[in-house]
Image (cartoon, rainbow, N blue to C red; front, side, top):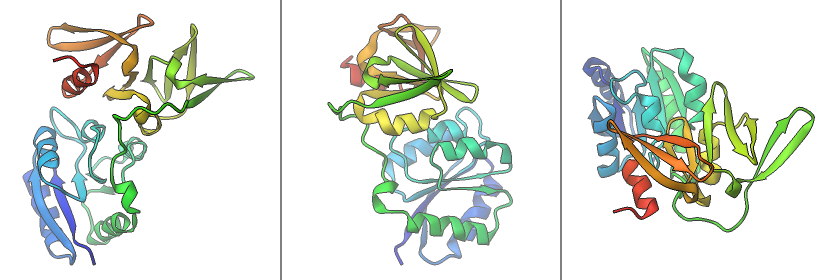
Length: 241
């Protein structure tokens, strides 16, 4: 049995300790770290290899859902007292969703799901290599199905339960989540710059910084909010020193 290296993230120390004690009683599991907030967790994930993150959702500053949107993370199992976030969690490709108090049986099931995943799915998709192959986005509007070359789209943004984009002055809605589109379009020049924004990096014409917040201006005149954690990555992709 391969050993699973686990990082435990929860802002409540008793909850972290309980999960760690449960994990330490299981064979084939190694706890490689713990964090009480999203920023610390992100730093650990980038410096300490792990195979799984047990991640709370309700945390200050950066909640678990926001953290899970960061690129290049290990597989995630959410551990939370709130059942209402399950749909969003699975849109973010969570391996499992455990309600507190977490039982040993459910924890073992989640670990087994991680073990049974193909190795290729445990790695985040490459998001920096740009492919020349066109990607088609289909959107239904009334009785018409529009087929759009993704390269012609400047941004996709979340609005209620839909994803919205504009193409040739038409606003179109699709049911694909931003997480799904990020998986499809990451290798085609798109970057998730905010939990509700996926932009075409080639369409960026300016960055505006006001009162500590950053907005990307796109070639069609629209603007997209940029998370402060992703400003540096966007600048790197734009070649801004």
